[in-house]
Length: 275
Image (tube, rainbow, N blue to C red; front, side):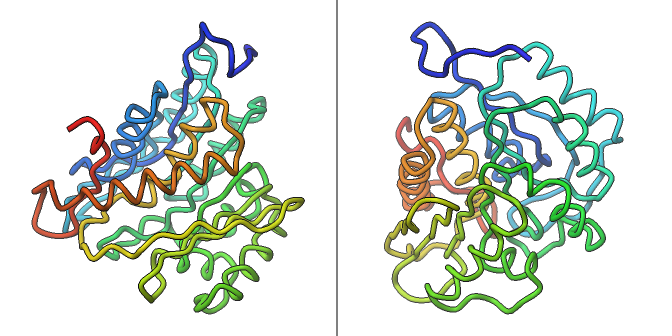
């Protein structure tokens, strides 16, 4: 695996997304690549599943054969000097294990968004795969970014309802082996959205923003984890990457109503700074 410094002036920051494809373009691989591009990182991709999806529902999921998933990952890593990997939808235990096997020699940051359910409510992770996610992949992660339902499902407990229970669940998730947990409060209540960054050695950091009244939040979780990965690829430390990604996502949600995409939960506006 080639090595180099992220801060060298003559290099290109590269982020790899390993995730599912969203045919409507708002989430998954498509959202990740848009966020990478908007934030100055070159995006490579490995597709784990193809979803027939729009802003209202997921109507079909086709898993990519595991040998093809493995081949995609190795093709990228054997040639591109990847700085950060973001992992999203993996769908099954076989794909999770394949991804882990393909990343045995990757020693840089890995951001895992434990995608389980689409914005429409459709299941994106088989129930049988949750244990594999916990035992095989999460211990490899530099950061995991669960929302409140995902954190509760990973821990087999109730939904966190306040900052104290979010913190407790973040600390419990650390025990699964990951280096850091960003517990996302987007599914919470109240006028303020609070995310908590919980690590092993640093004080808990909170990121706050006014809750935006919009239904157009399709792909928001993918976008946040991808934007964190983009900032990490550009050489920023974790806390600063999360801070900037949080601000970028809030601006993307605030601008989402400027887009007229679909009849359900529309996407966030990844390129709000450009157009």
